[in-house]
Length: 171
Image 1 (cartoon, helix red, strand yellow):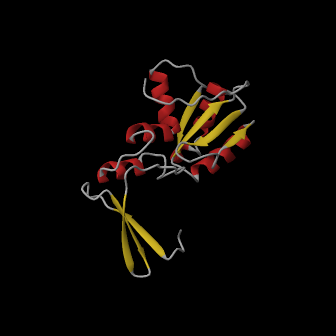
Image 2 (spheres, one colour):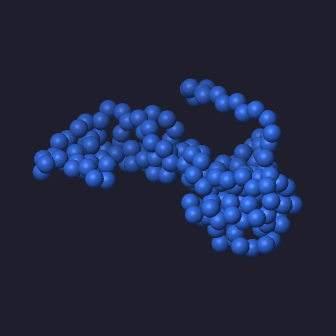
Image 3 (cartoon, helix red, strand yellow):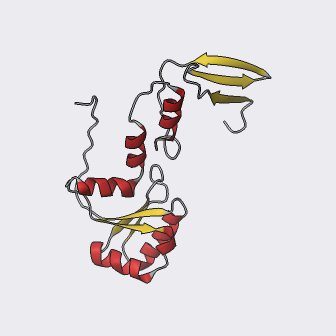
């Protein structure tokens, strides 16, 4: 995409509902009936593209802006789930500027023990994710996660089986 000879712009004009594609000095207008945002990670599933579709008045499938943004942010998702009283893995939120503070390591150890999983709050997939079984690995994991985001989620390890279920509809 970066080296493509094509470029494209989604028109923010709600009367257009179109994508403009330039190639070889020519511009083609492509009307859009509905968008399928099948993107992953930052600027893909974090509400950004959904916001662009909203601005352009283009219908799209999937979650809206807020649900996408909150779901992409692991730490904020945990905070919201806490307020709903839903059981989940215990966690500690850490900010990038705190990762060299000994009191943060002590809080994680006291609250969660080892092993723990360390995750950048907003990175897609497993980017920057690590598992720590001791303080040395915790320090390294926090540093790695901080390379991907300013917010970091540290979670207790839960031994068991994970089941996932897709839901279609809003009822």
